Length: 230
Image 1: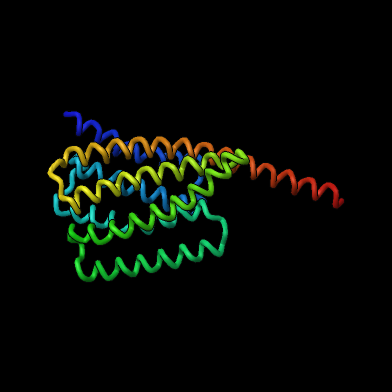
Image 2: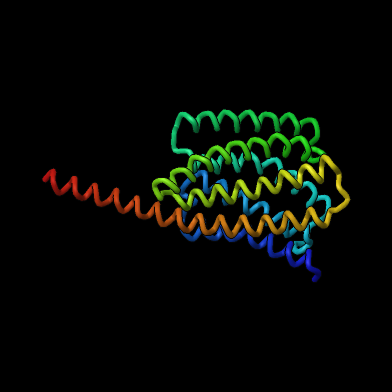
């Protein structure tokens, strides 16, 4: 096993770490985090198939890769709703997600599962994710620094922002510049994936701790209300 293959296996496995964390902490009850779980699971499965660690015909693997790209942006937009509790702003994200899905339907009708469709999906999709994730990150990091709250969510957003920034570089050099340094592109993808997944796991652990604390506070308040109302 060469160095790139080792990193590929490590990166593919690292996508399962947030999946395990979401399942272990039972955070899949949040629809947005269930979308994150699905996104990481599909990406991990595709990476294992591409590394030929899961026996699949090459044509099926290529088609699966395109399907992964079709699903990636809508799933991540849904996942980002976890960081935006304001219903009115959530409606805006729902509309944007719906419009992007409609755009993907048009691409699917025109190109089907052809690999070249990735250029048209990931270009605007990456811009959407980066813009919205950056907006949310700035809001959360301000609250974390000033009030010492939501450090877990801030780390989760940092993981998403970092990984999709790296994917943006990969998109630019691989699809637009058509660089020949493919091994370097894979190296960047593997290393960024490993780092972001570990960061996501830490963020999920801290978020779960805070959610449990908030839930305990709600229970205590209900008990106090029942006590004083008797």
